[in-house]
Length: 287
Image 1 (tube, rainbow, N blue to C red):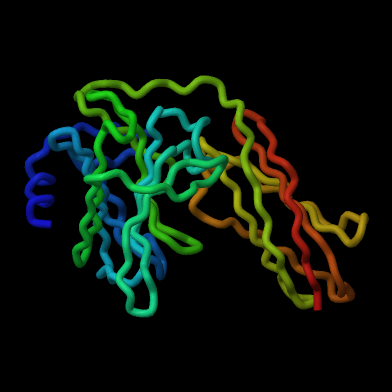
Image 2 (cartoon, rainbow, N blue to C red):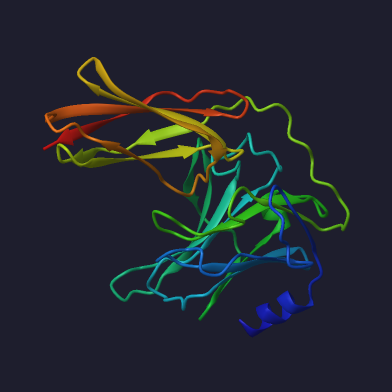
């Protein structure tokens, strides 16, 4: 751990933030303190290099526990949000996963599989470290398939239903050579991915409908429709906005006093390029 910290202190890198201003200086990005609610509060993400190793240091305001989930780092290796996973187009994710029940946690490595990730066997020589307020990961450029000077997009995220991320929306871009501009993505042709969750409510009260939208470029709008059998009861439209694939979304609907029984609701998402997701359905039970 001490060697890793010495490497982090001596490396010089250049970061170019994509879509969000506020880089604190070479090699670091500072995330606001206190913006995580009750979850893990990320305060910074540092990227550096040493002899072909890429080093990622995530700092948090909270004290980390060995048996609880820590933060993750996701990498968009081709700097294209329209390929890879639906988490901003990232292809690789490394995370610290808690063991629970006082068992020590361990890091895991995942590769993109469709819109999500699947676990893979880590390479020989990969590294990690855990301190009271930081998690460090390092992977070789060669394992990631990156050229000696190739850049990438990167995002850090905590766990939970409303996780803190750095940056707060989309990714920031890392370049080894200062002044190298990130590539400009081509036309967006990939539709968002929508998932709905079953809900219940009491007649005359407010129903809270939860759904999840993932989009590589992090900008979507939704149409939510509520039905009783084939009869449309309510349409709710959410205008185009920044949307994080690491976070859940919610809408509220006041249930009529005389309404009870089994309903259903749907969510369809559209992105800024007018790509439309498949319709996702879930039940809504009114007591």
